Length: 342
Image 1 (tube, one colour):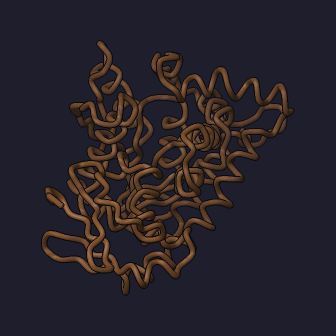
Image 2: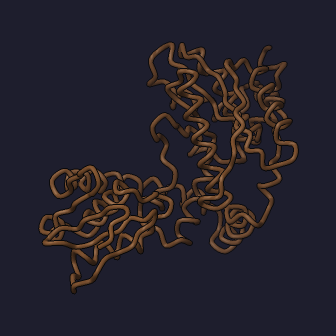
Image 3: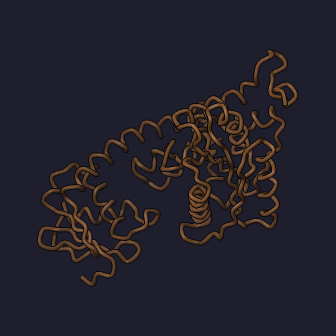
């Protein structure tokens, strides 16, 4: 179809609709480093954000010599979820994406409703990428999503890594729309004649993110003026750069101060105690993860308690951590292991 017949041209100016152009531009920038013949998948729910992303990818990927398909994850949390997933798959095929795959998942309970659904979704996306030989999976998180993530992190009292929000790239996952407002993806769908699905969960106040979106952010915009969303997203970017640099320094420290055996992770107190807290606690957090703690359960409070074994040693016995991991100080070392009796 021509751009005119698809409704993509702004008739007042005879140009491609600016919302469509903006989404295409960001998608192209996210993909142009990939070698030709790379397979890219779009994670599409059928909502406005992911549908706009799917349309832009279907347009831009072939121009870059890339193959583009889509994955639709059916969480099974709503009565008509299979129908919604099938409709989204058909929309993706009509855009020219191929292969298009629907993957049904079983959502657990760990991490709460939102966390469990996210874990199941990301597992399914990575499995689909492996199965279909894709090097990249595109996610449709927008600038609004990033701002909401920062506020949720602030409410939890999180550190810089959490406040840094979602990374533009994380393994096979890429988020090309993090600088694009949600209003732009909605406008792109209208201009392209696409009919997105509206997830009723996005209006359900039992979810914290929904309350932030519909109650907290509007109050902030009213009290502080426009630009709050942009400022929060910009803050995430600045903190991410700092957090990345600190993570590199912490990894270097762990290379010398942390050793791993078959059953234990052992940290040298003498090497750790002379380091700045921001670097030392990151190394200890990584040690706890390697010992078996789950990242979603390991809190800043847990890490601070382990850090006290290094910097405020008064003969404490041990620290119990998630997933049955215990941290104990022995002869100048912090030992972390699962099932340790003391």
